[in-house]
Image 1 (cartoon, rainbow, N blue to C red):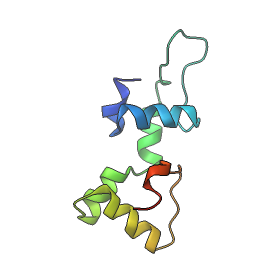
Image 2: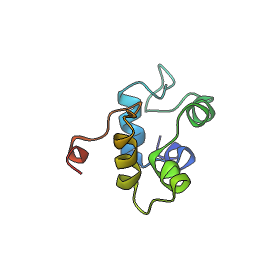
Image 3: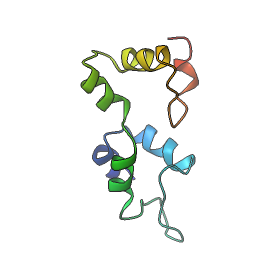
Length: 87
């Protein structure tokens, strides 16, 4: 999973959170946590990460991109960490 995080454009913690939420599928019955072979491509073709969105929108910080989404009434596919609620 640690090797998959940069390929997904995510931090290790975000990748682990997506695995816990079952957004990313792992290989069953394998010792350790390994993503299924097609998961990186499936994820990248389905979701836009906040860092990608920030680059597209030209914002300097990810939180600025999130604020624009909030202002437009767009909800994230995966809930953001509780510490970001009051940003």
